[in-house]
Amino acid sequence: MTEQKKQNATKAFYITTTLPYVNAEPHIGHAMEFIRADIIARYKKLMGFDVFFNTGTDEHGLKVFKKSEEEGVDIKNYVDKYAQKFKDLLKLLNISKDIHFVRTTDAHHKSAAQHFWELCDKSGDIYKKNYKIKYCV
Image 1 (cartoon, rainbow, N blue to C red):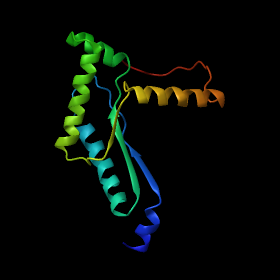
Image 2: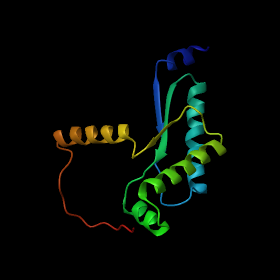
Image 3: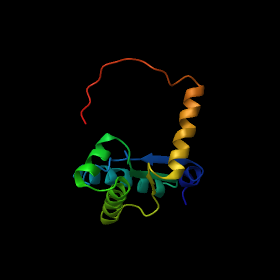
Image 4: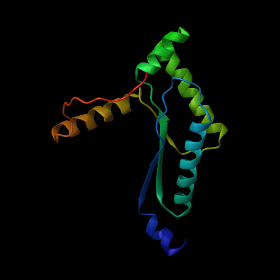
């Protein structure tokens, strides 16, 4: 092991992709993002870093709910089906096996998100404000 790799072995490297909504089939854009992140994660591992590679699916939001209604499927079954499609894509692309795949419906994710919200609220980072944005559902 080179001296640089020895130094890097004590350093953590965190990489994540966006968590795609499960309101549609995985597509080439998802594949591109997963592959890019995987390349970086593998390179950092080769350089000796302790890599944490995070990806997963976002299973909340009006878009997801509307799509489950359109398909006439219970929301839980709907998100389970599409989360599996994203897992299958990762396998098909030969993405690193040691990724952390999180679903926003996972109990540990909900707990962590609530804890983070509380920390932000206590520090004054959460506040009400009116503003105009463009958003399409």
